[in-house]
Image (cartoon, rainbow, N blue to C red):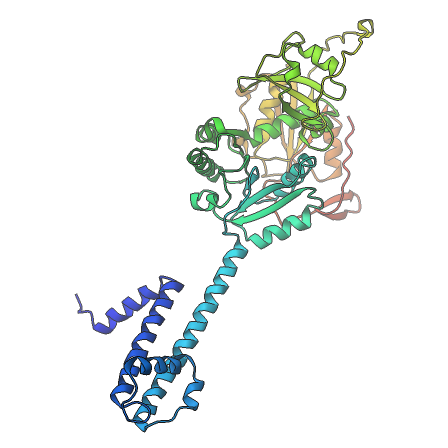
Length: 500
């Protein structure tokens, strides 16, 4: 091994000292200044002082040397022997270097601190707030819904933490969310799965956590980190809500969150909504009403005056709400039956305009003679036309098969090369529907007319999975004879008319 020189050792030591931060640099400058001032002061005493008489004490000489080091103007007024002035000149020059280095170090430290503050590294001092982890195109919709939900509350706070820049997140929210109501938004920068960064969000005092990440693996890691911190802080009231896209990750995510998390399968939930909306015209508006905080929505409320009453009696006493179920021992029961009685500790599941506003009134008079039972309608086979292909189509087909009558048919039409046959269910997995897969030019009018001529019961449009986020341009052929096409962008409104 080559012998290490003293200069190399000094360079290595100096590099380590510089890497320790501002405090180490300030200490190093203080040591250098002390050494220079003490040596200069002692040399000045040895030379007899300014006048060469040797009357100055060591302490007085060191003090004057310090003044030379930190104030260059002192040298201009100094008088004395040539050796004395030479020593003070050297001390002053060293002082200029040290002072310049000190000013630069402090300036950089202040700049770094301001940058850290802009990035959002300081701990959030809030209580009873909502933490959203992750920042994507869904964030504005989530914030808008929370703003409507907290319209009857004062000083609501949402803490958004993501790896994006804090200033950029604040600008995006400010530009896209028009009305925050009583909400305040606090943005912080950090890794979703980092315990250190999550502590900045004050999970010990939050009331709920929303994990809004696209990566399922990162979602599971974040749930584990949040659950660990909640247990460490003893926060038993906070709840974690997250979505996963791969159904294979659903069970691990539930295990990671335990009883503190509600994990939704994104594809399964959306697929169910799509199938039900296609089977029942107008269902989408009902679901949008119930799942949005605009208008009436679903709330869970504990109403002591309902104890001992049946669901039917409760509904006859609610002037502006409807009871649809109860929560007993943390387990929800929807549509439990008219004779089901509410017990002590039960919570009532309500459809109402806002939480905390359901008050029982007088029992309403009911004319039972006006009731007429609707006859059961036999489910008929249907034909579903699917235009396009996406990775959630398999889940849609499985959901549709669960409700379809035997003999139903699904026509899947997509551009050539867009269909992933391995991502579709086998016919053996389907009990009630048969698949008819066609690769064709679905953006041409003649093709669409031919498909619609088969009289599908409903039509499902799926987006292209290969469409990039910034690729928002598409065209529709409006005149097949002349090949005229009209180009549209994602900011244009396009009306699609389907005829049954």
